[in-house]
Amino acid sequence: MEFFDPECESCAAVEPALMDVMQKYNGEVRLVARYFPLHSNSTLAAGLIEAAAQDSADKRWRMRDYLFQKQREWGEQQTAQTDKFLDYAEDMGLDRSKAQATMESAAVRDLLARDRKDGEAVGVTGTPTFFVNGKPLPELSLEALENAIQEGLNE
Image 1 (cartoon, helix red, strand yellow):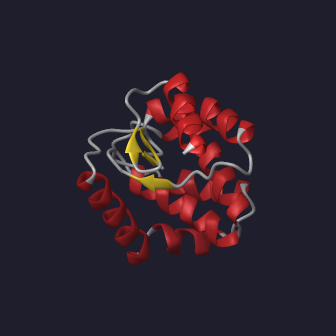
Image 2: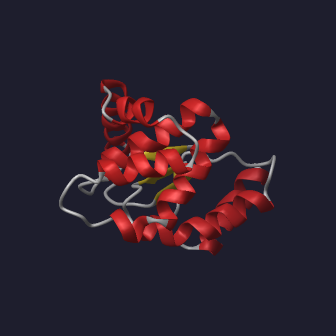
Image 3: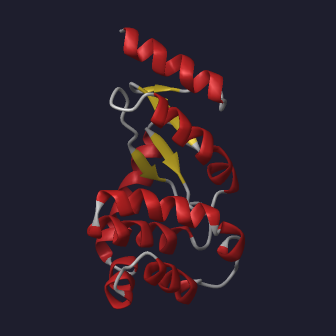
């Protein structure tokens, strides 16, 4: 399980290695991504990921990756980047008005609040934070993640 923030630079930085690990253990390991919004545009970005997820599970992951790739364009802005996110929705083949409705929905706000509350309950204070089989990763490194996965697979 990963608690992440779409606007977090560290989350974006670890994404390629994380996806490599997931590919390496394809079929043996499942990634559960939970939101832990900490920045000003995190909620809108998470809403856009959820809008993509309504189209397909594949688009959820593609949108997450796309937002990390485009993070320099929209991250660390003090104003809402709604129009930019709606452009990204169109880039991904989503309906602009449906994406906006999802981004601004109570369902997304509730999901984010629930994920944040769950994260806080298990000691998450920043992003990214990983758990493997319910155990927190002792350090943020590829080696620690792979060791935890191997240990989990051997249990």
